[in-house]
Image (cartoon, rainbow, N blue to C red; front, top):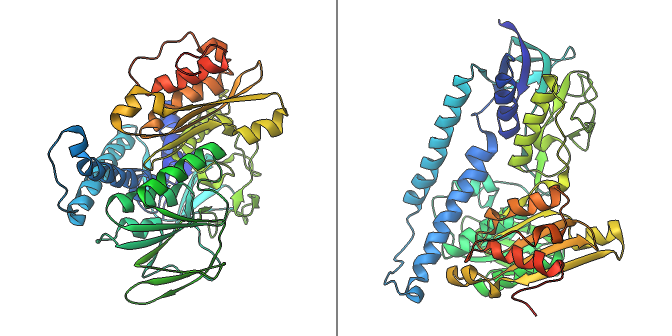
Length: 456
């Protein structure tokens, strides 16, 4: 039996947990990092990294199909699922080895096993006890499902979809959020017929309606079907496929059903409530400094209400480590956290939607939408989309919304504009290299500053 003491004990080795561990170690603290699976968590092994690797494979497939249009003679003769999986797994393995080396070099003690919080704010792993002056909860999230909908066989989660060794001919995606549209995009690029079922009126319903409509148009053009404003009613499965019943009486047939209705916090069975940690709907209740209801116990990442994004988890882990070590870090508001769906086309945003801005500021809101059809670089790479900027009239930029291939690489400029409460007049003199897609943002800033260049 081990009974060890550290300055910081962290439960969960995913994005938030390992970021907290690294930063606390940098600041001179002794750290134990407890993880029941593999360092890196869902993001590295079953989420962000492997799905984006598949999306790159899908992008290459689309590029080959369209090669003749740019003067390249090429032919797509097929998709090799085994080679595709090997490429994806190779990326994950390389990143995993790098993370292991980084953690080891920092002198962080890694404990393998399932941890449980105790009443005296220690963490037990089996019979072993790890005591921390401070404890950080970073146990992440897991796939949600719907009541009565059993996962297994031909009913997939995003994690089991990653392990498929075939390319489905027909697939139904339940949920039009980020996970749903990304997998729909991949499968369509690989040759599948795809139908998305979304109970709300738009794909990516949390985004600005202009972004949602632009994505819907692009998906229709690609042949991805969407059943919007329609609820799932049930599914029948056989060895050969699925029959999905919808609330309007429609039955959809497919090889697989992907359940992509969101993710829930991993907080059950960890002793949190017995230790006095307050929960609400399964999420850990925290204050604006990420303190839980128990002194010296903190929570970060997907178990904290708000955006479930790896980069949010990173930042919260860093924030808590600095808070623990006596620094005075600045909390990061949810509105300055960038959001990206890596579909084809991509959808990226930061800040308020136009509707949210009008709810907050009434009629004192001005928005401008620039069509990427006027952007030279977008025309060259063959993407359509929009750059939309929302400002308070005569005031700062409060929202930036982008749709188009590769626009996820542009959203940091939007984050700077929103985070620094910049006015379009401040941004208009800044030069955007030509020809780049960033010029689309520049055009929107120019227009909101009252001096559009390439628009009438």
